[in-house]
Length: 604
Image (tube, rainbow, N blue to C red; front, side):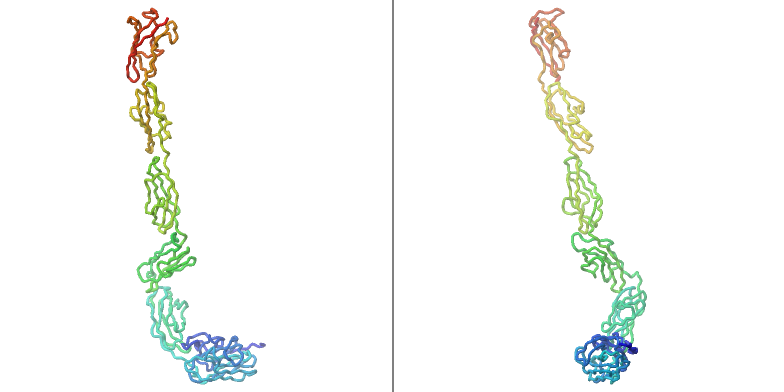
């Protein structure tokens, strides 16, 4: 193409076209030349008579049974108004000088009713197609440049009324709410108007119709009912019926804007967590005051499983969830969000462990002062017993305990606790023992207690032995006895032991049967009484010669080497060897008194 074709402007306005798909006369936007490159996208013309256009800017198309080759086809639609028609196309300003070609169809997929093929260098030759028509039926006109030529063209229809221009009625009323909150969306409707191909909806500034700013033309039949979102200004909501050729009178209804006090008040947890016992978690929003509300839940980073239009949606993922609650009567709405995190598991607890007071007792206590994390109210369990609201466990023995805390959402926290007890307090007095009369015995020693530092109180029974309860005390028992020692520590723990002490009362007394006074300084040099530790004292000792004369006496003294002794003299004179008689009364430590009689031989 050496020279650019200068085309004249399209003179047919938008309102002169209706969609060609049916006879309901939907408005649509025609191409730059008034038609479309494709049959199923064309608009119906109100009148093709006198139409001026161009085939520049159109594309290669297809047409069943066309009488030539298509390079830049342009389709038009129209509704038949007469039983016969003749349509003539006249070309001008053709780029190649070949002119146009023309065809008339009653269906996009059928052969043409009539086809007028062009010819080489035929730009100056008008081309006419004609056919009988069924009034009210849709037909299709195909215009194409012969051999790919680009031309301006003019159409002439005979008779002009063969292309139908439909009449239209008037809008009767607008049905919708009279009070709305700013931003509310409601359905507004109007009764269908005969002949309307669409409805032009309008409203106050800021009004949206099906999401688009007013005025908005909505094709019929959908245009009888639209979703209107009101802005911040009240006023009239109006609708006007139109088709591609005519328009009817409008109808309107007033809307009053309500204040924020009409918006519902929402109560929603500010923080929630997924459930620990189920894969699904249910949220809940409470609305005040009571009323008829619509719910719309959404999330950008979580996942809603069910109930997106209910007050209790079901979800299974962490994220932020937003709810819009709208009053069904006036559209007043409020919005709130909740952050749903991982399961809210209790993470720690403030405990008081009261140890077992004394070894082997069952008086330990576990007190739960405060639980951190999780969701109240809490249930607790010790050693996997049934859960309950207990905050304290008592009468416990020492040992390990599994404490379980469960939140209201079923999330659990376990902790292994050890409840201590003091070491066993033991008293070991030793084995039962036997001592000889006069011997001393230690009734108590500090090492008899397993932990001497714990001794706070020490009691001895019988009570008369209490003075002997010291680490350096020794006791001389007059007779066999049993005693018990009880030790109590500062916590009141007690330990005791008892012991039997047997006192052997065999008399340890030795009286010689001969002595040798001439061996002075030796044990055999004197006659004396020897006693063991059981002997308290010699009360009396008398020695007589064979004829009964008293030769020696001593009273009330301690025996053994330090006591009085007979040296074999009488009144200072040495006595001749012989056998002498003695009588001695001895007192023992157990209080007994006993006479001992016998003879002793004096040897020289």
